[in-house]
Image 1 (spheres, one colour):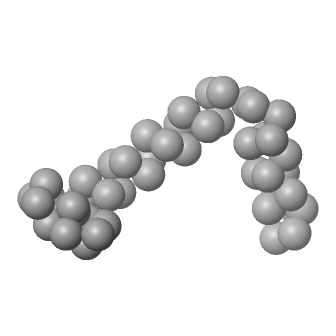
Image 2 (image 1 turned 30 degrees about the horizontal axis):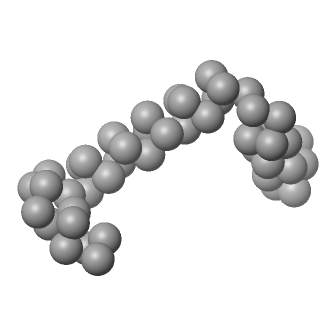
Length: 48
């Protein structure tokens, strides 16, 4: 699978509401944010 097809697959899964895929993706994103900003206050300041 080339990069374009991979991106299209991801887009289609989001658009077709593959709920399990979306939840897993969000959980991984939250984990990355928590690791990048171990202190809650620093996350808020970076977000703002």
